[in-house]
Image (cartoon, rainbow, N blue to C red; front, side, top):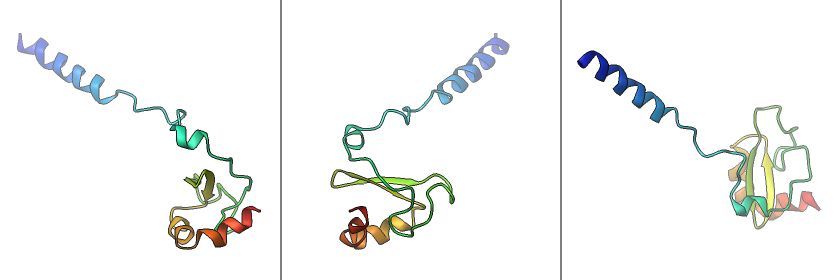
Length: 88
């Protein structure tokens, strides 16, 4: 009997741990209602988006903002008006 219970227990654990997480395609309502980011470069560094990996995306006051990397986010947050002026 133990020879059947153990493999079933392992299979159950594997199925539970392989459960897909929430789909990244379904964005929260706040992100879907944000104005799209119009540039193909990082708002802070000016680097072309995607050259340093997947862009980092945030929503700031209803505007989607994209960065080349996560280290640009604190720079933006320190002086958002300076960088938002580039969108105009």
